[in-house]
Image (cartoon, rainbow, N blue to C red):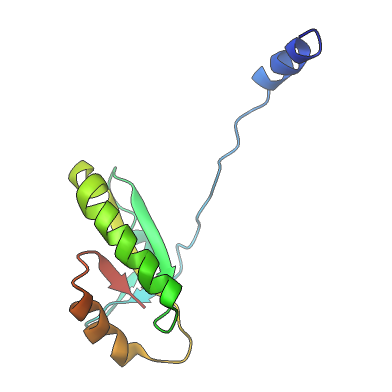
Length: 112
């Protein structure tokens, strides 16, 4: 206890550091209609946003998005928390993504 007390006192004077800083103000994303939007438009308002990156040919991504969609709809969406998925596959399968997402019935926005 004698060693713990000075450590706790020192920690009180350490300035808090931001846990995560996301700075992508110059980046743009493509919508399913083919238009582009700046990333900053996704993070507007006073609500939280869950940002998920995924690939089409990865079964883990599919399972994770299915589970996240369920939890988001039931527990987070009623509180105004947004969920956005970003497709990151570099092979250029953009045309396959839109029917895939539509067939899954995901309610969150998907960008490329």
